[in-house]
Picture 1 (tube, one colour):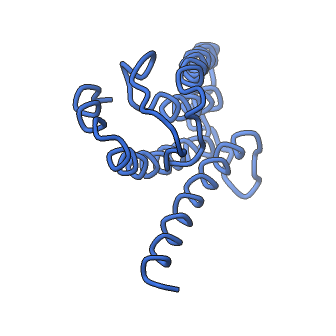
Picture 2 (picture 1 turned 90 degrees about the vertical axis):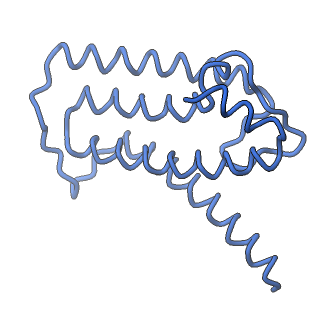
Length: 157
């Protein structure tokens, strides 16, 4: 295997690892593992429950808009799909990564509802994985789309 092939293999493996970790952490939101602390940080109140639900509803709404706006460009991988185009309209006029941010806010909402160390750990882990995924995706987007840097400078968040 040449150095070029090996480098491409490692890039593809890193892409796949980030996607796997993202979906794994999201799936853990639906399970309570006994070996991780379920201890609540604060007492859950009706206000925290309402606030968590409200954050989840807003984040899901933003997620739906981003799915609609992405259309055929949608992919779970950081590398843009072949024949894709740069989407800068709709929700993407205001934020470059609304789907990723929606996932983080949904996780924050679940944490606020549960107020446990377990969900705090999941939220922090998901935010870190998405941070790495955004950084990688932006490198791919800059290489693929000549106007991405201009878009990135115009849309800061």
